Length: 435
Image 1 (cartoon, rainbow, N blue to C red):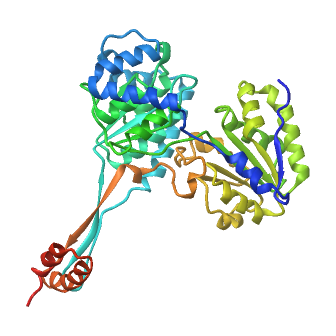
Image 2: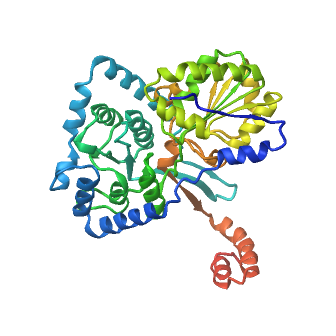
Image 3: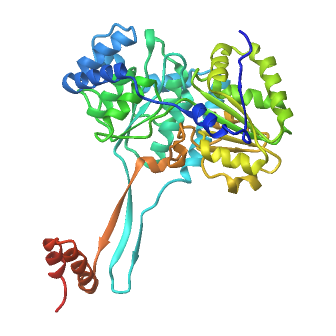
């Protein structure tokens, strides 16, 4: 393929802001035809349960099964997949799972209480959800890493039942995905995907239990279905295409930076790789590395499309300005490939995950660093966080007034309630006021 023409921007150019807005523009779920298809699937599964799930799975994944029982993996299937892995895969998966578990163990929220002088008790009770649904993509690629990143935080949180769904187009089962499910503590697993899998988890069927929350990435049908069932169940996020932003001072090997950009561009044609540097000559060097390395990539067509349509090489005046541009973009993945990343860190306000230093490739975070790789995209890092244990725990407020406390605070509540013309509120509080 021909060398992709990558957008070059300079933060000093007059139309930089407009050009950046145009580059970042992305509508994650906006296809009316997709919405109609998903709505039909959701309604059918809600009304017909297993029968509709089987019908849609046969149609979309080109299978020929007659019952949900044929689509469920047993615990023996999962364990056998783990036991039969080649030694190098077994070792790598086990190390990654343990690192992910160790990191997420530190996120567990704990219940707490305190008592005021008059004996009033206040606090917070942290409780895990009962059931979580884990969507694992299949088809173009299979992601055992997604199993670990979605299931282990739920398991650490104390969720009682983890229901995994993974599509198996043409009956192709990825044994590494099943092995990861065994390692991560998945309770039940089904060979279903798409909007029908989201519907089954959200509404429940004769075989698949209704869950409290659905997590995990998927295609536009999955994302649309998740958005539609939100409220019936919780969801993690509506994920857009993968993103990487690299801030480099020009001192890292340009081949390394080019490959870091490729690592996200290879996900799909809509992925967005961006490089920011204070050194224009370095941007030229990375551009040359891209031209040299792209023909060596197995997924060069996808990478080339991503680079041509959504990538940018941005020149800035200094690292402080690089941080400001980053905060405007709020990327999913941010690499600080600079001499002193700790010094730059305080200026970074928005990023899903921050990879610090020249040796910290984003790819390590995808698999085995420990922190979660399910991250906010499309600028939502401004208000969202990585998936974590806290996503599978609920917090309930604890309030227990003493007699004296109820009397004193009853006076306060009475005044405020009457100010809002809510007399029953006021009188309810006033009954407890000591005369």
